[in-house]
Amino acid sequence: MPFLICVFAGLIGSLLGIGGGLIVVPLLMLLFHIDIRLVIGTSIVSVIATSSGAAAAYVGERITFR
Picture 1 (cartoon, rainbow, N blue to C red):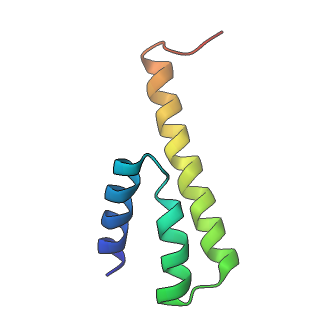
Picture 2: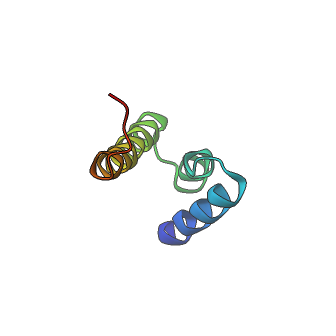
């Protein structure tokens, strides 16, 4: 079930141009009754991981500014 939620959030988030956290955070809280602090922390870690991956790709392609 959590995998399907992530797929749904990724699909809707990419189609609408919004972050998947906008969908995943409320669903984790409402459907799985996970503490808000843990959900927010998880969302922040996933944003940091995604941003780091994108930054590494930009640096590898030499698209960054000096």
